[in-house]
Image (cartoon, rainbow, N blue to C red; front, side, top):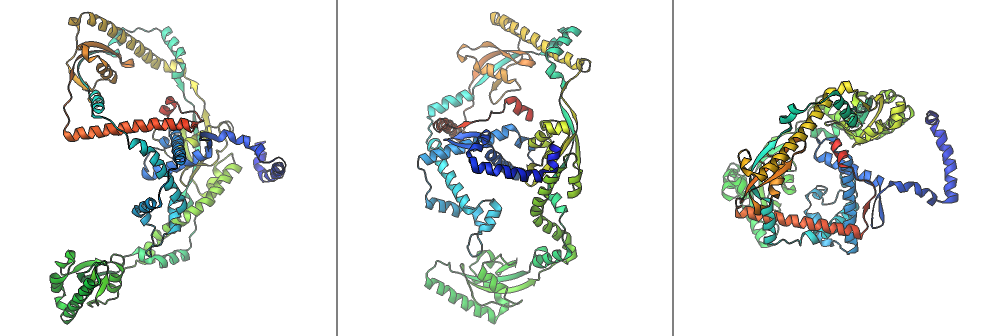
Length: 637
């Protein structure tokens, strides 16, 4: 049935259009709103966050992170944990925005103007005549200046909500000392560890024991589901291959940009500066001009003395001692009046007095290096790559539409799309439903793997839809062979079963022996046998297990020395003799100040978190999708 639908989809779509539109006219849109309720993923102050909004925000964050850290593992960005974290941030932003709005917090025009004036990034969009390059800003940021301004206003307003708490947090010296002393607490201990390996020889297991363990723990002895797949990737590089560029287009581009492919004209000049800042009184500037005119007359009478006159009279400390030499410069390196005069001179000429914001200059042109433009053929490859790159985004959009249509309309093979778009069909074996460590590209993308393991893909071996796996990246795949999860035969995993059962029973024996020794040594401390003493703390574990450190620090310092036990799980058991508390080395005054500041920041963060929880309750913020379990997060890692 679905194959027929694919084949005649345009006819059917037209027919459905004629059926559906009248129903909207007769019954209204409200009847159809119920199907969208499932897309609500969170709610704040009565306003919903929808799944499309969530997905778009996560794509934006993934793109931003990839730009900042191109080598980050894709599986980390596409995990359920990462997606849920994005939703939590969206809820937090909405809660703080609601609080700012209800508190009538605003940002003054003066503060906003000052912020924009100090923003070096915005300065890049100023044209030489001082105007703002609106189109360039929109291309670079994907937002209009008005949208950017609104976002900055909202961010500053919400910052006021948080800073009202974190900025006023206070911790007394006594509070800080009590907390820090507890954190840096040190104990001298001795440890007797009972390791499972020491008890393995005492464990005897029968085939019946192994069979029973295998049956009770069958989930541990399964081969996971896996699939052999083939897939296509369409990206900007692939789109470039389909761009046809004529020789005439390349030569036209070369003519328009020839200066970029070679070296610019360079001029070497010397100058004499009589300083007079633009803001100086008019009388002072006139005096400086007169002095410059006097020196100009002097060097024109004897051009060979220019360097000596510059050393004695120029007020440019950087060049005066070199006879006024400025070395070779290109256009754009000097202020405009100076540059215009410099590039109007012939070699050996001396300019008239040139006025700039720094004062009055006399310029002597010493040498000229003419611009060098390489021949067309030498830079043809570079030009072609640039032209293709400029057209790639537009070509990718066209190719993406073709890619999507062919993948859908011919679901039984990737070959038609590969041939049409000149793409290589790639293959992979033993692909799992969850990205494997180190997986990159489509095989590291959770959305793509979900599509591969969807029922239609597994049962009918149909193509997946085109999946966005990154900025300007689409992928589609199909399963060529599927192996469902299955229990491995007992004989195949017998050795693994034996190892796990022996390890489990050895750990139990170690724990029993350690518990017994703890009781005996507590009754008769003289009979205890420990290793050499070590001093441990939360920051200095001395290779001791975390359970040992925790047990030692939890021991009542008023009852030392004391014996305590530490259950190490699969690593056995430890009896710990806590001998005494060891005072920490007093920090330097700078270190103590830094610790106090860090504690204050921690108190501020805790108070801000508590305030945020209160705001969540006030604005009835709730997330409507389940949080990923720790096990799910762990399996993704």
